[in-house]
Image (cartoon, rainbow, N blue to C red; front, side, top):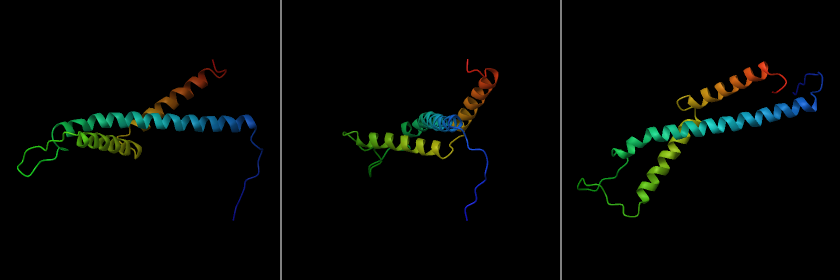
Length: 116
């Protein structure tokens, strides 16, 4: 069953404003998540630097990785982990950034309805 509510048809201007607002919200959300991802990546660096991600050989010495592949994979892994954490809600920083920007934008639009 498909129910529709009859009402006045939205004007083209209202529809385009809603679309523009949706696109702008998505861009803001993506930027905020990237920002939080960078912060999380910086927080994860000490783990890598202090040996949590270093491999050891059988005799207990660190393995010599002359190709740098291990470091590259570790860096890529920490970037991926940080991005995944941020996209799944992370520490809530991205959400707060989006809320703050949108609240300030709404306050500005109410204070200056003519767009100035």
